[in-house]
Structures are given as C-alpha cells and as structure tokens.
Image (cartoon, rainbow, N blue to C red; front, side):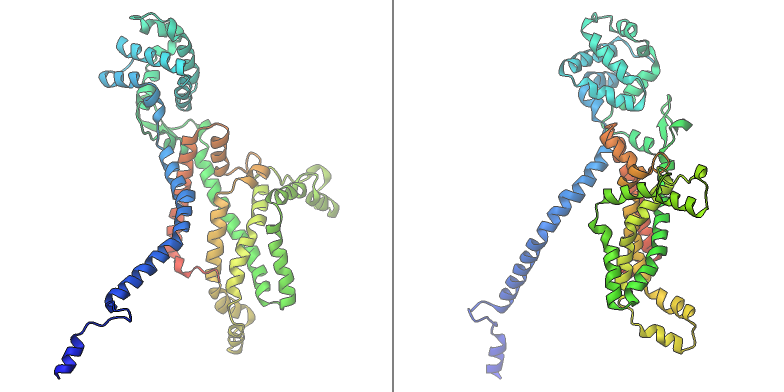
Length: 421
C-alpha cells in the first residue's frame, strides 16, 4: 500500500524530465502563438482595408475643422460675445486678423469652401473680404467690412459663422436626409428643389430589392438545370454562366448600350416583328430601365452559383419518394425541393442585394438622370464637388441601412440557415 501511495504521489514527467502539466501548457501556448501568427496577416488586411477606412468615413461625416483651425481669433471672440445679430467691433477685429493671416497662407479658401456648402455666396464673401483685409483701417473694421459687402451686417452670416465654429457638426447628416438649420438654428426641411437624397435612398433600396427578385426568378431555373442535367450539358451551361466573369464590366455595360438604345438591336427587332413602329421606338437606355436590365445581367451569376451549390447537394431520391407517395410533380417540387433550396436563395439574395445597393459604375454609364443611385452621388461628392463630409455622411447612412437590413434578415430568416454549398 505504501509503495502504491508513493507512486501516485510522484509527479508525472516527460522523457526529458519536465513535469507533464508544464509541458502540456507550453504546447498549448505554442499552438496559440502559431494560430495567432497565422491569422495576423488577415487581421492586418481587414484592419487597414476595412476597419480604418470605415472609422475615417465616420469621423469625416461629423468633422468640422476648417473654421476652428483657420479662424482661431474669430472663434475666441465668439466665446466672449454672447449676443445676437451683428457682433461688436472686437469680433470684426478678430475676423480681419484671421482674414489677413488666411490670405497670406492661402488657407482661407478652405474656410470659404466649407461655409459655401451651407450657404451659397459665402465663398465669394470670404475671399473678397480676405483680398481687401490688408487695406482696412484699425478701429473701424466693422464699417469697412460692411462697405466691402453688405452681407457682413446680415445676422444670418454671423449665425452661420457661429454655428460652424465648432469642431464637430451634424450639418452633413442633415444635408444627407434633406434637412438643414434655419436662421433661428432649428432643423427644417430643405426647399423642395433641393430635396434629392431621400428620394435617391428610396430608389436605391427598391431597385436593389427588385434586382434581387429578378435574379431569383431568372437564376433559379438556371441553377436547377445545372444541378439536374447530365454532366456534359451542365458543364457547357456552367461555362455560359461563368463567361461574364471573363469579360470586362465596361465591355458588358457597353454591350447593353448597343442593345437597348433607340436605334439598337432590341428596338430593331421590335420594329421588324411589328410590335412598335419606327417613330415610336422604346427608350430603354439612359433611364431606370437600362440600370435595372444591365445590373440584373451583371449580378445574375452571383445568384446562380450559391443556388447551384445548394441544389447539387439535394438527393434526387427525395423527389422520387414524394412522387411515389402520391404528390404530383408541382407539389413534389414546391413542398419537397424548394424548401431545401432556401439557404441558397438566402445566400444569393444577400450577395446580390449588397452588391446592388452599392453599385455605381453601371448606373453611371446607362442610368442617365433617372437611373442614378445614391452611390453615384457619393462618387460625385468625392471626385467633383470635393464635399467629402457629405459623401461620408451619405456613405455612413447607407452602411447603417445595410446593417439594419442584415439584422432584420437574420431575425426573420436566420443567418445560420444561409449556405453556399
């Protein structure tokens, strides 16, 4: 008994004399380090290509550094002035000092551009006043600036300056949903002729849903044929499905321009068969119709492939069993086959919808005025108007909408039920 107890009380060791528990802990720690090193490149890639750009976009959508950075004396004078209307001479003196320095460093244009986003004509006012600032007489800045431009005695000008003299703002988000600040600082709708973004958001959403539905209707039969036809024929059909991936997106879009234009192939065919006459050819390009047709064609393979990968795993014996139990072909297909393809429909729908809601190349080429989506205006503000704050705000709202729809999909369908094969 004593020998057995002594043996059990001994610490188990490895061949090199290390305690077994310590050796196991070391092996586990080494495996964790290896796993961490393996996923580090992916994490760094996601960090720099996805997380940091999203954080930068969210920051730009509320950032308002121009007035605070390039007009510090005016901002400090505003803190001492708590009145309304036109400010006293001290605030005008601080403004002139900032205008002189900004004109010298050529940075006053950034302030002028920022203020012009909120009120048309502010760029001309700021730049004109900065050019004449060095000739103004000390002690009489107020009257001198008003002589340069009467807008300096308008309380609306000073209300705008005070409102923008903050490091962060909601201006961009308000503009992205067709709202603005009025003269009293209250949030009100934009004038009717400036209300475009809510309409674009709604158009983008329903066009993306429509394209997703069209891809399901067109892609389901194709995927079914791919999964059920003999291998020789299905391989040829698969090549035809994958062929668009081997062709440039620009070439595919340009081909639709040739097909859909008034003098194009489809209109010629309709005239030839007598459905329309030559004078009443159908306008199918440079409008929303062209956008829907071209985007459906481009995104269709992204629906077919997930559906095919799920359908290929469904045993044909299930349909035969349903037929043997008395179901007709339609009932067997609808009650037995279709429910098993729901995970593929979910995967394809998510993929097509997310791609469609952010598409801008195809609508830009074939959409014309009525076929533009919200992503086209994001690109416009990034590349042409250079209003990056508004572009970031629109992009943030679009991102939030996609996440909300994704959570809704997960709530109703369940992301666990989505399969790619």
